[in-house]
Image (cartoon, rainbow, N blue to C red; front, side):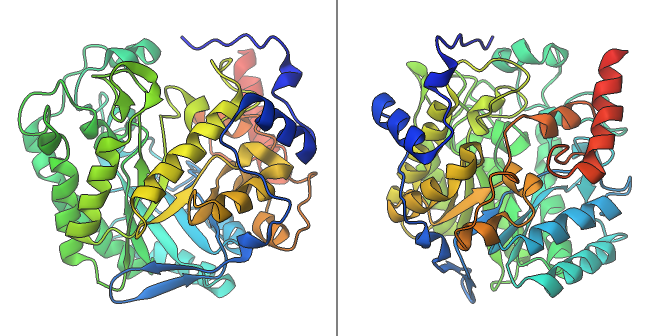
Length: 449
């Protein structure tokens, strides 16, 4: 499905800022570059309504799933270790990985899930984090939908059949769509999880709408029958019902956020936010409309933008040097797409705080592009995911102008390999003490069998 034959690999690789500048100029990518990285130190205000949160710099940690929770959904020792590393990174905003709101909506039996029985364990972890940093911490609430895989879920929970996804995931063929009755009760589960997140000490909650998980797939349910499919009003109904429920219980001094996929980059009618005549182009008309409505009706104040789905076409949302397949485009084209989409959202919705993405691929050049993006109005905050896995003090070093190329993420996709093998996830290259033995056992030895 995905194949791109590079005529000259060096055309798209770079080992210095000068080489990156030359490639960007030659290929015409929308990738700004600055020799001055001081904009990373800018403070950023997030207006939650009754409280303004001031970030001490413009760097965030993206939600990065470790798949290392306990079976009851509580954080494990590895989970706590990861968040303490994030806290010590110097980033001014921390975003938790996906926390399931129902048992059947977990991607594995080790995905995090907050419950009345384990909320105190989350509170203990958050208290430890807050001893290190005063950065706000957002709890990402999710239902994994099509990608649910756990002891409670006999088959994926899908909104509709999707032939584009089923080309990559043939196991989804023939799965019946989830009922309206099941969807009707989900808003209460999200509200309950939001209440628990606040009790645990999180500074805000994220209603996750991306990567073809359940709420993201709701937006692309053009072919679904009934009240949750077809028209724009129907496809956004589930999301708005959940926002209504969460808003009713979320204190007004807490941040209401979303990890938001602005485009699925799949052909219509199987993808949302894609040009109906050309699936290679995004169309953010509906994304901008929905975000505007969520701001006006519910007080949405913060998004961490993304595109595509890592399960279907990972090169879209995280350009890489090496992965499960050869991507159909040079990685810098993916970086350019992510940056330009973020800029379109930010330009249209000035009151919305936008976290941009796509910077980890740029390695030692990432501070220069990130700072230029802030200067150019592409986003308010620059987010790093894989980089945060790999480089423990990445934000501190960026802010100090002392980025260490020997510690940077090299976008080798080994963290993804771990996840695909059903393993706990981290960086086997830069965090070797913990994750290299895990990689050898769960990936290398497994592949020999």
